[in-house]
Amino acid sequence: MTATKKDPILVVIQLTGGNDYLNTLIPHGDSLYYDNRPNVGISPDDVLRIDDHLGFNPAMAPIKTLYDQGNVAVINGIGYPNPNRSHFRSMDIWHTAEPDKVGNDGWLGRVIRDLDPNSENVLTGVNFGRGLPRALAMTGVPVASVAVLETYGVLTGITEPAERDQALDVFARMYAPALGTGPVMDYLGQTGLDALMGADILKKAPETYRSSIEYDASPIGQNLQGIAKVLLADIGTRVFYTQHGGYDTHANEGPAHPKLWSELSQSISDFYADLMEHDSSDNVLMFVFSEFGRRVRDNGSGTDHGSGGLALAIGDAVQGGMYGEYPSLKESDLLEGDLNFGVDFRGVYGTMVERWLGLDAKVVVGGTFEQLAFV
Image (cartoon, rainbow, N blue to C red; front, side):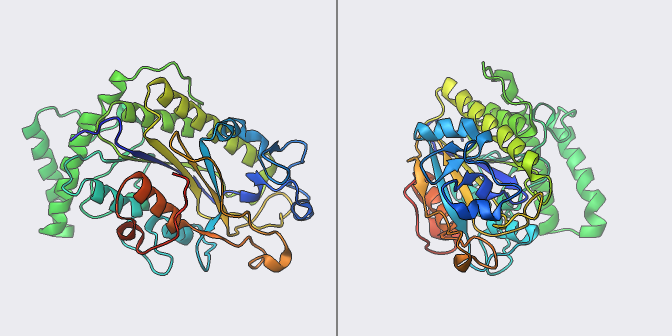
């Protein structure tokens, strides 16, 4: 089962570590920003101004260009009730859409299940990066996780199907004394077969890829180029995922944060240009998020874990502009020194699930939450 060009595709980019919202979309018109950011504040002369109040970080020129073209939706004050400032727990909440309990399944795992309920395509979901993000994990839902596309594979040196099945059987029996037999081993065996099948298909994707775009040399640039190679191979992948790390800027934020956004902005711009060059940008939606924002007051050379954050939706189909109110910096309006959230992330997920992918949002996010009109 392969997708046509017009099947909607979702590309999720995770900013790992807690992106500093206040230094990404800067309230340069608010003196409270500068009162609280004597060390890491961005000069109003350097801000890429949107209006008299807000502007992008100066490292985000490529994103600003896309914003001016109407292809970027900025979602302000995104978060969830009773915010958790632990990286692990907060990211787990974003991955499972379960703020009140420890969830079992990833929200994108549910999406992949609903897009392909019979698991006809083992590549409906593909992650670029090491390991499998919790967002994609769900028992019985195959997802490929690729470190480097050109060398991706499991037992790829064995070409005969019978020999590879035998090798998988040996693998299964190696673990049988510890795990026993039955459903667990059946699942491991099926997972191995799915991985083999996915590797066979994926290794052909780079062979057909041609582009004039020279991607940013950063890891996020290379991952987005890998996504482009698979997406343009038209093998039916509907959900892509990748991460950009380093946003836990407790110290040295002055140089570190702009460098991250320079890499990310350029890489997103390259990816978008690549899709446009191949007439494939009209059915791709990018979603950029982080587990939480940072504290309003800087700590001397950086910022500590906070709440209230920013997300971006990018694509041809996006109704660009600002969504949600920028949180107040007044001390009386803060939550223990942090920004308050105003937009529940589950409503944003629901927007993409329902209005973009055409699925039942309630099943994926576990209820009804206010949606936004960015798509």
